[in-house]
Length: 120
Image 1 (cartoon, rainbow, N blue to C red):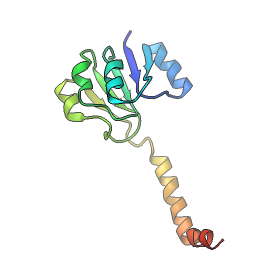
Image 2 (cartoon, one colour; image 1 turned 90 degrees about the horizontal axis):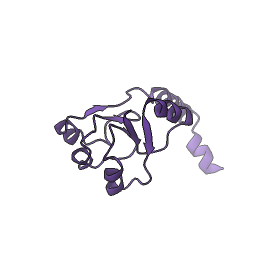
Image 3 (spheres, rainbow, N blue to C red; image 1 turned 135 degrees about the horizontal axis):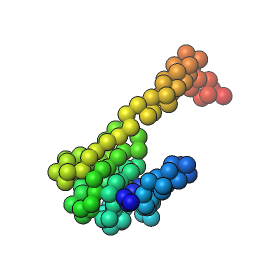
Image 4 (spheres, helix red, strand yellow; image 1 turned 45 degrees about the horizontal axis):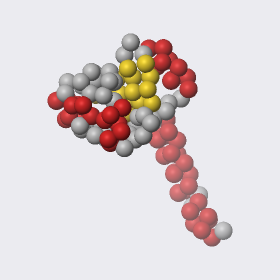
């Protein structure tokens, strides 16, 4: 079974499903040295914290680094590619939240919410 390493705890239902698919390990610490050490035996890394580039050379079994969210800003893509590690994310995962925020800001601007709040 693959070793799945996550930089952060996940939703309990997700952790249960991942534990069924492999051995799930959650990072005890999120500093670069700890992440490198804890990911050494990982086959897959679920990314919610910035990964140091050295992690990819220190984890020879690593086959995938998957960003839990949109964007790849937390994964050093060049180091991952050089190590032959697949890099993926979940594009559009935050689309609903972004749309809700846009409408909230529009209403706040139309109703001059900041001005009213300051005056109160």
